[in-house]
Length: 331
Image (cartoon, rainbow, N blue to C red; front, side):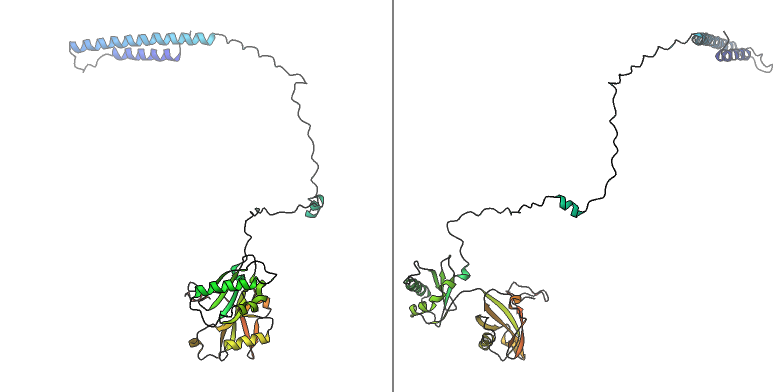
């Protein structure tokens, strides 16, 4: 067995140590006492003992390393044979198919031609109306018969009750009317005797009976009578301030017979604001529902002037102007 590097190193240490401890003393060194000499000898013996034990350990390790290096390496176990599956068990790849090149993109007209030409009717999903006992009534504004009185009666309530009885009794005497058509009667603060017909009838149906009712209500001072109809208001600008509302009524009815006046025209502004002006504006009321486009005219010829027409906008104390931001008038 060849000494290893560990054995050589320990041999060198041991040799150098022996030389160190047995080195002769310098002649100039003072002799030590006997107690000191004993301590050094015991220490040297202990050191030599440890070196000897370390040498034995290193020797045993060297022998084990040499034994392991000379032992033959065991042969590897033979590999298990590879099992090749049968052709029927092998996974077959799907055949690859080549896609044909894409053709031209069809147009909307071509797609529409291929679609069926049958159309289904779109129906709105409206809830079925529930049947009611009473039919839907006409608006109250379309069911009024109005008699203008010259003087008001002393007791308005009693006079209205008596007028309702007389009017129904007079109308039911005719063969074409079986049931009393009037259900309400009242006298307003403007001295108008107003009758309301049944909800299923319009006041225009009883317009031929106005003369008969006036004769039956002879105890009331009746000035005029009419049936209620929808009205439309317009503003006419450029009317001379020397004109009167009555003359404006006459001018419109004589020049435009197809326009029926519903009320007497009145000035838009107060007399104080009309002072010093040559022309001002009036509010006119025509019977029927119409618009400025329906009139097919932007002006009316009145008093040898072209008076322009504008839509009337209803306003009140809560109406705010978009220009001056004040209340009481529209923009």
